[in-house]
Length: 419
Image 1 (tube, rainbow, N blue to C red):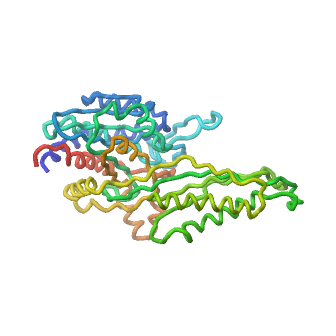
Image 2 (image 1 turned 90 degrees about the vertical axis):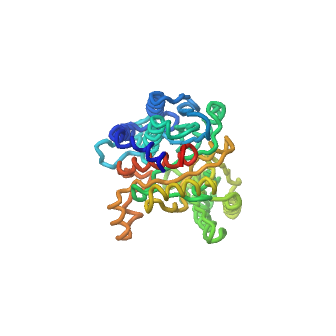
Image 3 (image 1 turned 45 degrees about the vertical axis):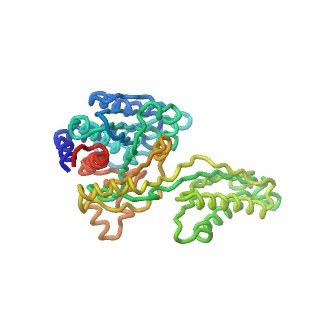
């Protein structure tokens, strides 16, 4: 793989700059649709590297296009947004940033999912590709997506004309830092990330004094019965070989201890991997909610709202096989199989909008020594912070090196010239 070696030869030279950029991005996180500083840095650097820059796509999205003669077109995506979480890593470059929350009250913001890693790695790979044009032919699109966490960033960029602003790619690629040992890369063909669906159910009761509950219809009891019955969907209605998750993440009702309230509201999150299971779970949620309300003689049927969905991420078999083979050749034993993930993403909307295949892989971010000790102790699930945790902090190296290398190795399968 001489072309890949030649492209990556400059990694040692730019490593200090990438590490500095990563610390800066980590210390200055921004929520979805507000990634003005981050997208500005991406646009500025892409322009310096010689890319044709399209910024402000969908608000804060950025695309850099580097044409280098005839050949395939490859799009690589990195997401940019952070989360409303107070960082507790204790790192010297930890975030102290805030953003306006509900009612204008400041809320803490943290890169608790690793999107700062993604931005840094794509910019590093974009620079190395720009500086080694003699080693590849075709077009590279470096896409920096806004608002992945809210699930509407890809939609915003597509609605704003993304597919008409950049060349149609032959393939789309993306990666995500995950809590397995840094230095490793992992691929998976077929379903890799779940679909996600949120449901909001409002149960209607009849208010009464707490001393005379028989005069009312208690929505607290109805909601509680719904919560219990929902747990049987996966355990009793879905086959044991079909993965699915149903979680009641929010339940609100009442204001005082001596009052039967008028209503109760709950919010439910569902993860599935195929259309049939997705439909089956939705039907079960609606059936259970209506049945429990009817059983309690509620004055009105429940209000059921579906909101905030993510599509499943299903890797193309041929594309994934091509990238996986290249990873095994380059990374050796550090290339592994990726477990089925219950997280969700909106990346797939981008290749779907172009009508092209895609693959999405993972890179490790956990300290290898700490991970090995936790694995030996059987405490990985507790000792290694996962994405969206206030203690989530990928080790800088070899995480960044691996992320840059993975992008270059993968894109080279289409763009590299020579053997």
